[in-house]
Image (cartoon, rainbow, N blue to C red):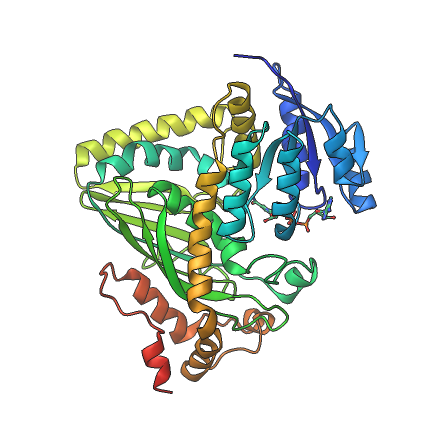
Length: 421
Ligand SMILES: NC(=O)c1ccc[n+]([C@@H]2O[C@H](COP(=O)([O-])OP(=O)(O)OC[C@H]3O[C@@H](n4cnc5c(N)ncnc54)[C@H](O)[C@@H]3O)[C@@H](O)[C@H]2O)c1
């Protein structure tokens, strides 16, 4: 294998770009370094200067095109707002640089497919950051547990996030259709839904409903639920349901709701089930996986093997984080292999986001009206947090709905019911 030390440039260094810089910097100090930091770029001079000083980056560019013209830069991490992913990724690939793109690939599936097509024509290789795929237990489950579940009958996910007005006021591109491409779904849910798609063989289609209930300062969704058809590891299809919101903080864990965390995913098969949540991952909030199998001997053997792999991964500092994702990406580049997270596989989750957005588009106002008729709602998310609103009957209804692993389950809000108003 060619022992290349990739020279790296990072575009967008105020937010998550700093995590990329820190990861590259740490990797560059290993005995056989995979990379060396070459350049940073940002239109924000103070952010650029801070990044340059803190991470010892030799070159600083205010214009990303100057970075692309720099022949020394071989790999580019793109860490800019969503609406810039498509135009800038296409230019990076046209310049023949290798691209490591932050999620989401694009504002929608169409943009993601366009970038993937450009990458297939480019001299540069491309990949994506979806760090939750690198949790050692999640990887073990995908490889060794999913295949012994038998026919997978059903999957579900639920997500509690809370975002106040400040979060959106801090970055004007957020909370807009043209800047962010959505809200809750494309920013918060994308990690868990990507994981489900990755475990369950990709996405066939999705539909659902959404509304903006408690965030008057933004135009995109803060609550929603969807029906998703995953392709299934064996191609035979897995029906799934999902419910999520940015209006509710994570509830406390009780005996009745041991899995009720910020994000929980459940996959039920003929011979057992997989549960992934952030219960045991307080460090970065990304889910870790566990499972129960009906065969006690197999269950014990696989748990022992999983824990041994997790200990081994821990020894090397491998986790569901950016450094592990970036390391795997650079190693694949070195070996001439496909990226560990390909553009094509990262684009799958955008079918879920688009499917729910588009299906629910014309019903968003009526969903709001329906929610207000059912439930006394706080005025906005900040008031809701101050008053300790727990989602009331509305949220309980959605939770019951995702928990019914019966494909005939009624969607709690649908056109026929709304038309009765
Ligand atoms: N994987 C994760 O867990 C994770 C976490 C946070 C953000 N992200 C993703 O990272 C991306 C950036 O998000 P963020 O929260 O860091 O955003 P941010 O707004 O905090 O930072 C974006 C940076 O890009 C810079 N920028 C904007 N236009 C530019 C241009 N033309 N040239 C150079 N720099 C430019 C801005 O000045 C800013 O410094 C998004 O795609 C987001 O979804 C991923």
